[in-house]
Each structure stands twice: as structure tokens, then as C-alpha cells.
Length: 144
Image (cartoon, rainbow, N blue to C red; front, side, top):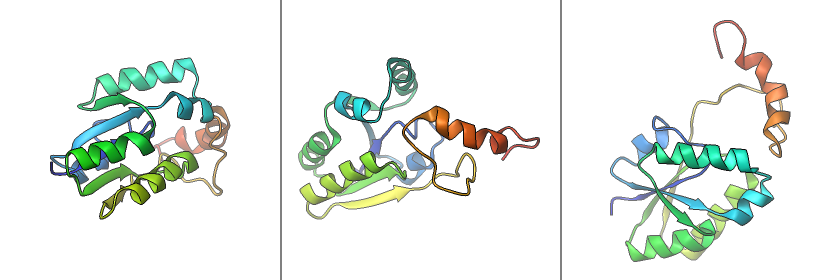
């Protein structure tokens, strides 16, 4: 296998740069109910995530990323993991566990153009708090 893309909920679109970086790689999304509870992702957001995943060429596996990914990486002898970059501490923590579990794994964090440029790191606990800070820039005439 050429590589594996670990897709998470912050990169749910076909034109995300992670798909170009990992061209030919299989994309995988870990449906982790405990993570979704810890990240305070409600039912409506989960439905949105699921419907978005259905539009992408991605395999959905139920389970904790730090347990699922090492199994898949070892099974398929994958040495390259592509991950959409994120400031989300829960996702970064899972990624750290994956890299600790799989020796010799090369990880490429693929950045995307930010939706808006904020002066300070936003509170990532709830989208509404983020949106209150970001909407002034996002909705200005001419876009971002």
C-alpha cells in the first residue's frame, strides 16, 4: 500500500490537500464514539460527519484511532501516514499514541489554508464559540 490517510472531522472535503499529498493512499476514518463524546460532538454534527464521509472515497471503521490505526498500518505494512494538520489536542494525542505504537512510521501533517486568521487560538470546545470570533472575518466583503 502506498500509504494511509487518517481522515478526521476537520478535513471532510474532497479537495483537502491531504488527498493530493497522499495520492494513491487509502483514506480511513475512525468512528470513535468516546472521542465524539469527549469532543462534545452532538448527534446533528455526527450526522453531518457521516453524510460528508459518504461523499468521499474513505473507509469508515468504528473504534479508537490509536487502536485501529496501528492494526491497519501493520496489517498492510504501511510506512507513510498522512494526517490533516489540526490544533485539536485530542486528535494530536491520538496521533502521538499511533506513532509510539508503530516503529518506523513516517507521518506527514498536511496543512490547509485556514478558514480565517484569528489573533488568538480559539476555544475549540464548541463550534459556536469559534464562529462568534471567526464570522466577522469570514463574512466580510470579498471573503477571507
